[in-house]
Length: 258
Image (cartoon, rainbow, N blue to C red):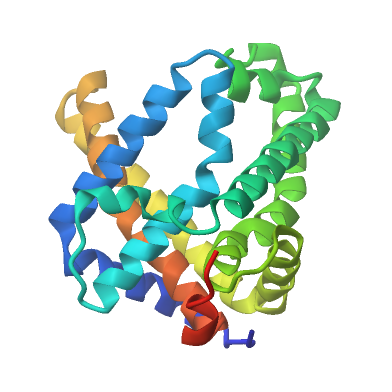
């Protein structure tokens, strides 16, 4: 693990874009397939969202494997979407379970500020009442959730790849991930700021397209889907770039059997 300069946060996104450009068509197929699979899981009452959340670390590793294959100019096929399930799956599932618990705790903490409005919105799709918006309770809950989620994201940012490629146990991977992100806070601030700007630019572009369709909701939804499909591969690639930057490649560690 090493500490990198703040400007490297921008380099991660640039590297992510380069990985996307290595095979754009394949990336679009993979991301769209992932979306469909998660949507199908989420359509199953109660158990579906739980399975989708617990499987996130394994899918995260699938995209890391895809990025590595593309960088090494190896052939990638659509079934690579499940590559992350082939190595140290029990540890990845453990991480997924811990992530589920952590998110539940974050939502519970947010409910202290708005009596569960945000939690019901996220979990059950219940739109927040106008009163919660007017009195600021929803805004306070969002801020509290953001603060509580920050250490969670830090702990899980590198955890799946450390567990899979460096054969770390779940607690150790969370520990190293947490301190790797916090010790590189400058790079992550730059990275986060650029992602925020990218999100704003994407929202503006979607709004312009929506106006072109005279506010037609289907046009706006299609524009948002296409924009997200285009940007997600770059973000996945940037995850890989941040790992390779902070944890220099260790072939011997990655060769450890599950």
